[in-house]
View (tube, rainbow over the protein chains, first blue to last red):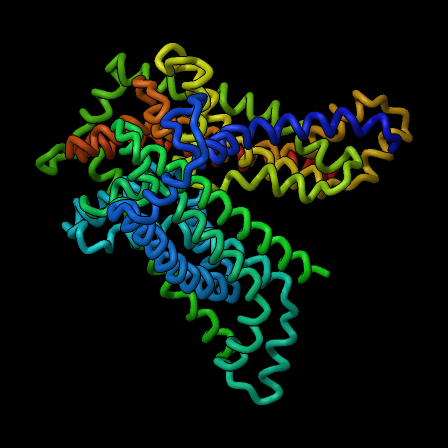
Length: 264
Length: 263
């Protein structure tokens, strides 16, 4: 392809990237100032970051959100992985049942998923929200199908002979499963885990409908905070956006570097 | 086959999980949607919805927002995916990561950023609630449209495009008669990724001060009022819509697959 043709596509890509990143970049810039509004003149300041990490309430929310994400993702990864393995070795009919029910939360609107879990556990079974059980289960419903979906292709790619070979060489079925099958699908398990983390961190709707009243995740807190007018909290959220942006950027880069290496 | 039985049993906990927490809630939703507060069977929940002009207005408003959002996302995402995989630009994969990455940043924080920018540009967000909602939705969902379309264009067999050219098709013909049909599965899955959230994600409206309701907002407000039956009714309406959409798009992508095989 000649050089002339590349300019226009390049300009288009730059346009799209600016569209997607302008708001975040402006926010990151202003998070390092003492301005209370975008466009307001301000001088360099780290006060937003100080507030973010010292304000008791905000710190609790950060810790709570991340702990929840880790707990939910570990459980989801466990269930999704054994689910995928079980489904892979099941007969046609059972496999269809797995696939169909696994697809429900994927295509469903998050509002409906959250509300239906709330109706089942809290209204129908009368479970107490304050136990955090509805919240954890609700987010698992959201995350586990994606773990299943990222493990499944690895199982399909796997050479079925290596499992048989392990058995022939004297491994028990349990050992063969752990040391051969699990090792083969491990990249899928890891990418499922990181997808689960990100889904849980991004979730607003499931949390709203199932969380204890006193507990807030980043999402539910941000939505409530924008309705109020506390400037200090508002600008501390800019700092939070910056931190999360950097965190995600690092995770995404690492994830792509490692998966790239593996394919080679 | 004793061994394969053992491996099969491994999935039972997840199957039980799916049954109790994924399938059962759907039944419970329909149960609550079809009963009144005292547990008696009734169709009046649905009756109220479909005879209430405001409720129907909400349904239409959500669909309009979802349609416009989906169309704009498609118009932005298709050229982007095309450029990423076909223009010979260096580092296509890196560009893709950059474009898709915002998808993983908490959407409420991204909306906060957008809100600040829009308030700066417009002075007051209340002047353009509809426009802001569309901007917010597109900003939120665009990466979800790019990813599937990119995948479908990327894995397309280039030989088919070249063959069309060799057989005398013009550039326009190659695009409309070969490339576009072949990327249909990606387009369809992009549409499902955007359309439904755009109908239901009421946080976009709330955060950008659009006080009009979409379908999701109805569930939210019934939830706040502890009105489970009407909330379940709206969820049931959405579920039927989702089922229809999934069935329809499943058919389209099957057709497209078959078409692709025939080409």
